[in-house]
Image 1 (cartoon, rainbow, N blue to C red):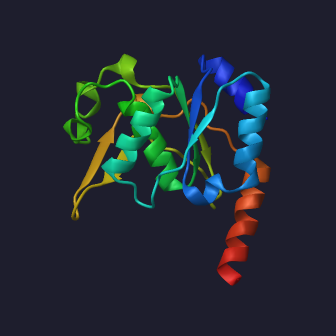
Image 2: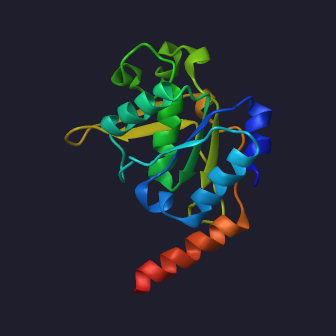
Amino acid sequence: REFPEICSSLGIRRPLLVTDPGVAALPMVEDAVGSAGAAGLAVAVFADVRANPVGANVDAGVRVYRAGGHDGIIAMGGGSALDAGKVIAFMSGQSRALWDFEGVSDGCTRADPEGIAPIIAVPMLMMTDIRIPAMMTLAASGSSTLSSACQRLMPRPCAASTSITTTSASLMATSAWA
C-alpha cells in the first residue's frame, strides 16, 4: 500500500520490481503490484535473480528495465534481490560495461549520476537492525566479485512493514521445519 506514495515522491511512474523467484511467488508481491496498478503505476516484475547474483542477472534486468521504459526500481527480498536491484538501478542509464565500475574507491566516479535510477528497498531480512548500504556486490566467474560503493545507491526510501517481516518469519520457520 505504501508503494504508490513512495513512487510518487520519487517521480516514479513505471517501476520495475526486482526480486527472486521465491519471493515473486508470495502473495505480497501480487498485492504490491495490484495496489500500485490501482494507483496508476505500470509495474513489472523481474524475478530472474539467483542467490549471489551474477552479471548475467543484472544484464537481463537492465534489458527488461530499458525495454519496458521503466523509471525506477523497487528491490524486494533478501540480500541477493537488494544487491541485484541496486546494480540494475545503477546500470540502467550507463553506457560503460558493468565491470568498468569495479573498485570500492572509485567505481561511482566513473558513472553518469543522471543514469542511476531511483531505488526503493523493501528488505525481507530476519534481523532487528536493517541497514541497506550504498554498495553493490556481484559474484563474477570463478571466485572474483565486483564490489563498488556509491552514495547514489542508497535506497530512497527504505520501506519495511510488519506484515512483510511476519510473513518472512513464518515462511522461514515453515521451510526450516518442513
